[in-house]
Image (cartoon, rainbow, N blue to C red; front, top):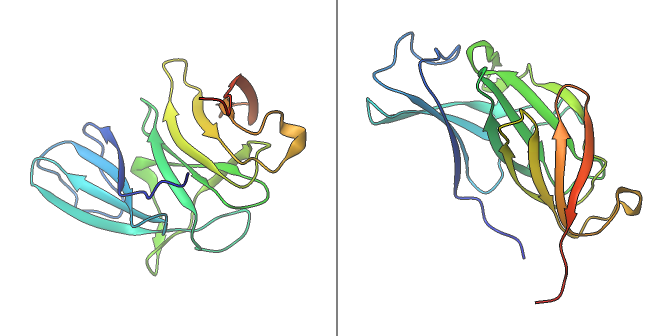
Length: 170
């Protein structure tokens, strides 16, 4: 059950974008589009315009390949990303007001730690407790627990914990 990513967005109010124009007409929404190609966009709601910021560079694997899933943002303006279909899925971050782009590549993502999951995850969202939440299915890392489930990732400690397992029964 693979879902095609069309557009995932989170909203940020009043943050200036390092790669974008110095001022914005309205709130900025950060979005990933293109079925996981790793392109990060800034959408200026007030100006009804969008700007490609750049492609995400994975600081663990060192490439700008595919598999980028989604982005999320905490109230302090930190953007979070994950990359699926790899053997060890990590969470990455960058401050929205400190994005560094070289030749179209965002090259200052920080590795926040391994989720202890592998293969396929879906849906990264920020919780009110400042933790990140994601779902895993077809997880091939047997040491991480159940194949399907909801996981909590603490970006400060770099650790995941299982919230609940999903049943394959309907």
